[in-house]
Amino acid sequence: MAEKKVKVGLVGFGTVGCGVAKLITEEADAIAAKTSLRLELACVVDIDTQSPRLVKLADGILTNDINRLLDDDTIQIGVELVGGTDAAKQIQLKLLEAGKDVVTANKALLAEYGNELMHCAHKNGRCIAFEASCAGGIPIISGIRTGLAANEIRAMYGIVNGTCNYILSNMTSKNEDFPEALSQAQKLGYAEADPTLDINGGDSAHKLAILASIAFGYEIALDDIFVEGIESISKDDICYGGEMGYCLKLLAIGQKASLAARDSSHGLQSTSHEARVTRHEAREKISLRVHPSFIAKDNRLASVDGSFNAVSIFGSAVGQVMYYGRGAGMMPTASAIVADIIDVALGNSATTFRHLCLKPRNQTAALIEKIDNLVTRFYIRLMAKDQPGVFAQVGKVLAENAISISGALQHEGQGPDNTVPVVVTTHPTRQSKVTAALENLDKLDTICSRPVCIRIVDIPEDKEG
Image 1 (tube, rainbow, N blue to C red):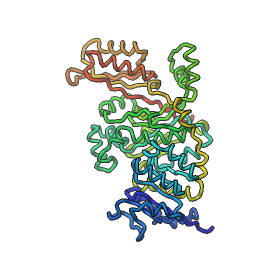
Image 2: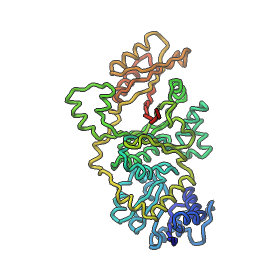
Image 3: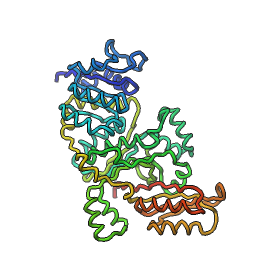
């Protein structure tokens, strides 16, 4: 079969851009042998044209003038790797309007402006490919869109931020405090100098917005996602949770389920009228959230350590499938980008993109489950005065809010100011009830600091036998 030459333009020549250039230039023969496509890096645009890079380009390829890319009709594919949102958005819009298909790894841009960009692509008869946006080198987007196309996806649980997973892994295995674990992550290059977007859960939320839109078929907005980071996590809670059989992970969770069904399964009571209304309103509700989560130590996600990522997905036909690998880094991310370039050049991405049907925003906003309606189990730690009657007070507050205790842990010995840690876990309870209970517990004069509350996520697993 005769080779087809495909010219590619790249905007952004940083770490990942260098990886993409390296793959295209060094693996061109191998790619051509497998696909009959001869990829050619025809133009690389970057504001910095002087700094040395890890890959050497032919003379005349590197420029700071994006119009050289936009005006070259022989370049079919534009790869945007500048990061951020404002400039990147304008670059992608210009590429699409110039008649070029777009490949990107920009999760923040897609999460915030993806709907607008996709409408622009459709208007111009172009496509956007974004495999590298959510999990580095893990082929999660194609897995959901094509590999699981025959399934209704009921839930997904993802470890999608390597920085947070490395920090929590070190706090667990090495008993490090959060600042120490973060500092080590920065030394090894797993965390940025300013790690805010990672540790506050923002990066995971960006990725969940993209994954959830593809998995559930909804136009998702960032505001749909409840986000809580790991900044306040203590190694003491990781230790206590470990004693009770749990491992702590920052999870990005998307669940599609009837709230009424969950309420019924957990014994929550409502009037028959309320139940009928809830069943009607919650038929297609989805819960989207990012937060620290205690999961069972024998769950597969609990064994995902260091900077690795993993996403566990539950489909109506396939059951549970799990995607695992390196979620970031120059070459894993470049691998996914070049795979997208090939898919675009073969025409596969255009077909998939054209048939991507998302329920429009005006129909989906009301289907997003509020965090207050979440029903799950909870881990609660209290620093209580070491005196008689404290546990009875705690139990009374929980009972008044219809919260049932499933387990308790208290060590002998005294902490600061004659206090002891008291840990309880609950049966499945609505978030709003736990929030109210925490406020009341904080008012007790026997509780000496704000209660710590971490959600326990019971992830089902397919098991033989």
